[in-house]
Length: 233
Image (cartoon, rainbow, N blue to C red):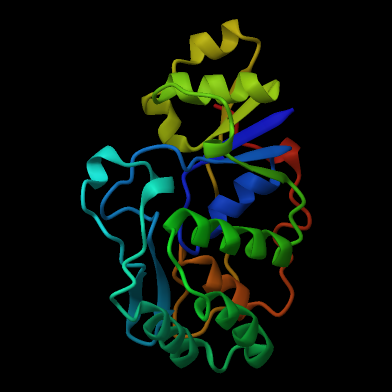
């Protein structure tokens, strides 16, 4: 059984979803420390003048002692309207824009308190839109603890994983010998970004998932995700 694990992300990029699609189970790692200026609460969309950031404002009081699951969205700022306006302005000529925009708007019309809850509800929406059927679990609901490599290994052992599909940065901190001793093979997801029809000039990779979703009338990248195509070092 292949397990992959990743921190929450706002409108994640294509590689995030490709790794989920290549896994039997995915763990939404919301019980680790929030990092400032990361992709947890922000991502990019493409505009005629280049990429821009859309950021979910958060309350950072004592955030160094808080997990992502504890981080609150800053309700004092009217960010939902700003994000929807930016998406509408830059994707209004996209295929099926009206239908898709109305679907997306529903998330931004709700009261948002928890960053992790908001990103998780969007994640479930995106995987459904991309026809991904991988089981998704939240780390904060599992009776597992640890730090860095130890935490990842303990989560894999808890789920009975036989293989762990890591992001490429896992090469910098995973204790692979400990995974091997536990009977868990480690492989790395060295994602090769595909090109797709994209508005506003030359193709720019690694935009937030809304760019792919808006530009492509039928999402095909993930329906054919084959687990035997994983890049193993």
